[in-house]
Structures are given as C-alpha cells and as structure tokens.
Length: 266
Image 1 (tube, helix red, strand yellow):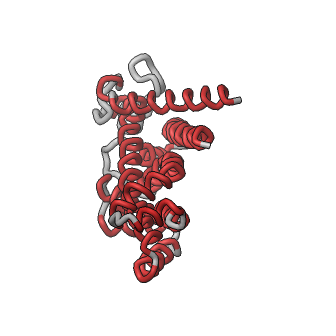
Image 2 (cartoon, rainbow, N blue to C red; image 1 turned 45 degrees about the vertical axis):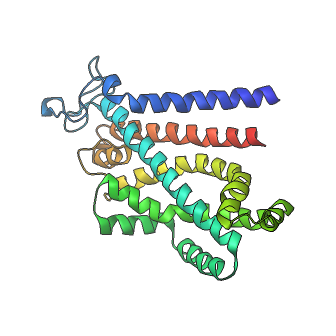
C-alpha cells in the first residue's frame, strides 16, 4: 500500500515537472510564432506545420497552447506563493497573540470571506484594468483569506502546547516562537492546501480572461483563447475544446499532486 502511494506521488510529481518544463521551454518547443497572424490560414485545419490548426487570425493553436502554459502555470504559482506568505503571516500572528490583534484580524478575515471570491476578483480586476499584472494583484487580494483562516486555527491550537509555554518561560521572543516553533509545526497542512490551491488559481485566471478582465490581447492564455473561440463554435469547435482540455489536464494534475502529497504526509 505504501509503495502504491509513493508510486502515485512520483507519477504526479513527474507530470508536474513535465508541465513546468513545457512552460519554461515554450520558446524552444513551440513549432511556430504564437503571435504571427496570417489571415490566409484563418481557421485552417490541422496540418504538419500546424498540428492543432489555426485560430481565426491564422495563429498556430499548438504554439499558443504551449505559450499559454507559461502564463497560466507561472502566474498561478506566483499568486500561490504570495497569498501563502501573506495569509500564513496574518493568520499566525492573529492566532498566536489573540486578544485585540486576533479580534481585528479575524473580523477582517470574516469580512473578506463574506464576498464570493471570483466576483470580488472580477470587480478588482475591472477597477485596475486589463492585464496579467492586474489579474495577479486582484487574485492575491482575495485569495490570502483562506490561508489566513487556516493558519489562524492551527496556530491557536499550537500555542496551547507545552513546548510553546516552555519557550515563553525560557524568554524566547514572540518572533522566534512564531518562526521557529509554531510555523514549522503547522506548515505541512498549509503546503498541502497550497498545492491543491494552484489548480484553483489556474481556473480563476482562465475565468477572468474569459470574462474579458484578465490578460490583454494578443497574449496567449487559455481562458482568453476560449473567449476568442466561442463565436466560432459552430464552424470550428477545436478553438474552444483544445484550450479547455489544457486547463482540465493542468488543473487535474495539480489537484492529484496535492492529494498524493496529502496522503504521503499522513
């Protein structure tokens, strides 16, 4: 049973590594320039030079899918790292100190949780303007709450342990206790949650782009590609299906990786 879990974890880790390599080496792997237009090839069927065909502007679909992986995967990783750091810091401070600090921060967390995340992200992105940078900022502003809530609960429990009380008696500073005693003991479930959250980030980036408040044209991004292809579904359904499959495979890979990581940590 243990070997099966390890094999599953290694398989998912290998798949994630493959996706990261694909995204990183997009300029080398992509068979064509993803931004070069050629109206003579608009909606052309798959061929040797264009394995997935061309979009309505004659751009290579395969190249745009590969370049889209860079935007989706690396943006989602960046967002996850930022919200993880911010959320864990706020939640740990809130749970450790308690009192007025916890009251203020927990009220802030409660207020943020009252709004549907995607609706709030759309509103913020709309105010900031279209662009991948603003998409990242918008999602960071709404996604830190989950990590703050979880780390607050975990740190509140951890501070009750005897080793924390002993550290206080020995005169250790609050900062040292938080970073050397509490965070190392609550970090594993938070990491698992973060690995599962990457899939959500990928889908939310795609959703914002699909709704027109994400990336700017002509940047290759899967949600924007679906949006651009939805008007051509009657004539060329591949314009929607291909980027949708890319989103599904990538999100599923990160989800499965998170589940295998959770099983391995257990």
